[in-house]
Image (cartoon, rainbow, N blue to C red; front, side, top):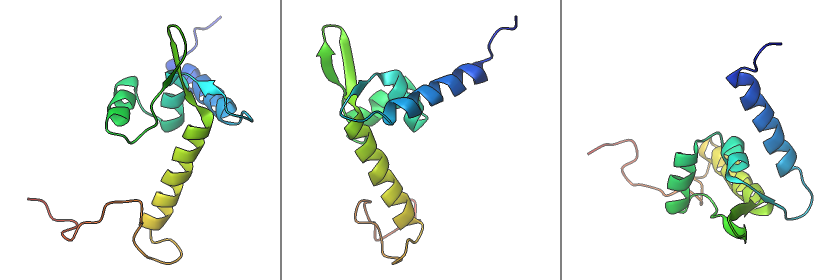
Length: 108
Protein backbone atom coordinates (compact mmCIF):
# COMPACT_ATOMS: atom_id res chain seq x y z
CA UNK A 1 0.00 0.00 0.00
CA UNK A 2 1.38 3.38 -0.96
CA UNK A 3 1.26 6.40 1.21
CA UNK A 4 -1.12 9.16 0.04
CA UNK A 5 0.70 12.12 -1.45
CA UNK A 6 0.17 15.69 -0.39
CA UNK A 7 -1.59 16.25 -3.71
CA UNK A 8 -4.07 13.46 -2.89
CA UNK A 9 -4.76 15.05 0.49
CA UNK A 10 -5.22 18.46 -1.11
CA UNK A 11 -7.61 17.03 -3.70
CA UNK A 12 -9.62 15.32 -0.98
CA UNK A 13 -9.84 18.57 1.00
CA UNK A 14 -10.94 20.56 -2.05
CA UNK A 15 -13.59 17.91 -2.74
CA UNK A 16 -14.78 18.16 0.87
CA UNK A 17 -14.87 21.95 0.59
CA UNK A 18 -16.96 21.79 -2.58
CA UNK A 19 -19.35 19.38 -0.87
CA UNK A 20 -19.61 21.66 2.16
CA UNK A 21 -20.42 24.68 0.00
CA UNK A 22 -23.11 22.67 -1.79
CA UNK A 23 -24.93 22.07 1.51
CA UNK A 24 -28.45 23.43 1.43
CA UNK A 25 -29.26 25.70 4.33
CA UNK A 26 -27.00 27.71 6.54
CA UNK A 27 -24.53 25.21 7.96
CA UNK A 28 -21.18 26.06 9.52
CA UNK A 29 -17.81 24.93 8.19
CA UNK A 30 -14.38 25.01 9.81
CA UNK A 31 -11.36 27.06 8.84
CA UNK A 32 -9.85 24.15 6.90
CA UNK A 33 -12.82 24.22 4.52
CA UNK A 34 -12.73 28.01 4.17
CA UNK A 35 -9.00 27.82 3.37
CA UNK A 36 -9.62 25.13 0.75
CA UNK A 37 -12.44 27.08 -0.90
CA UNK A 38 -10.36 30.24 -1.27
CA UNK A 39 -7.05 28.43 -1.85
CA UNK A 40 -5.28 30.14 1.05
CA UNK A 41 -3.36 29.17 4.19
CA UNK A 42 -4.67 29.60 7.73
CA UNK A 43 -2.30 32.53 8.21
CA UNK A 44 -3.72 34.27 5.15
CA UNK A 45 -7.26 33.46 6.33
CA UNK A 46 -6.65 35.26 9.62
CA UNK A 47 -4.99 38.19 7.83
CA UNK A 48 -7.93 38.51 5.41
CA UNK A 49 -10.43 38.34 8.28
CA UNK A 50 -8.63 41.03 10.26
CA UNK A 51 -8.60 43.24 7.16
CA UNK A 52 -12.35 42.68 6.68
CA UNK A 53 -11.96 40.92 3.33
CA UNK A 54 -13.34 37.56 4.50
CA UNK A 55 -16.21 36.78 6.87
CA UNK A 56 -15.35 36.24 10.53
CA UNK A 57 -15.92 32.88 12.18
CA UNK A 58 -18.49 32.63 14.98
CA UNK A 59 -18.44 30.46 18.08
CA UNK A 60 -20.53 27.36 17.37
CA UNK A 61 -19.86 25.59 20.67
CA UNK A 62 -17.21 25.72 23.39
CA UNK A 63 -13.85 25.31 21.68
CA UNK A 64 -15.28 25.30 18.14
CA UNK A 65 -15.77 28.12 15.64
CA UNK A 66 -17.24 28.04 12.18
CA UNK A 67 -18.11 30.22 9.22
CA UNK A 68 -21.62 30.23 7.78
CA UNK A 69 -21.80 28.66 4.34
CA UNK A 70 -24.11 31.48 3.24
CA UNK A 71 -21.38 34.04 4.04
CA UNK A 72 -18.85 32.04 1.98
CA UNK A 73 -21.29 31.82 -0.94
CA UNK A 74 -21.89 35.58 -0.78
CA UNK A 75 -18.15 36.31 -0.74
CA UNK A 76 -17.61 34.00 -3.72
CA UNK A 77 -20.47 35.73 -5.57
CA UNK A 78 -19.01 39.18 -4.89
CA UNK A 79 -15.54 38.08 -5.95
CA UNK A 80 -16.87 36.66 -9.22
CA UNK A 81 -18.72 39.93 -9.90
CA UNK A 82 -15.54 41.91 -9.14
CA UNK A 83 -13.49 39.65 -11.39
CA UNK A 84 -15.89 39.97 -14.31
CA UNK A 85 -16.23 43.73 -13.93
CA UNK A 86 -12.49 44.29 -13.57
CA UNK A 87 -11.94 42.23 -16.71
CA UNK A 88 -14.12 44.64 -18.66
CA UNK A 89 -17.46 42.92 -18.13
CA UNK A 90 -20.38 43.58 -20.42
CA UNK A 91 -20.45 47.32 -19.79
CA UNK A 92 -16.73 47.94 -19.43
CA UNK A 93 -17.55 50.21 -16.49
CA UNK A 94 -15.30 50.14 -13.42
CA UNK A 95 -16.40 47.87 -10.58
CA UNK A 96 -18.43 49.56 -7.83
CA UNK A 97 -16.95 47.01 -5.40
CA UNK A 98 -13.29 47.86 -5.99
CA UNK A 99 -11.57 51.04 -4.83
CA UNK A 100 -10.75 53.30 -7.73
CA UNK A 101 -7.57 55.35 -7.91
CA UNK A 102 -6.91 58.38 -10.05
CA UNK A 103 -3.28 57.18 -10.39
CA UNK A 104 -3.86 53.58 -11.33
CA UNK A 105 -0.72 51.77 -12.33
CA UNK A 106 1.62 54.34 -10.80
CA UNK A 107 3.80 53.50 -7.83
CA UNK A 108 5.26 56.10 -5.54
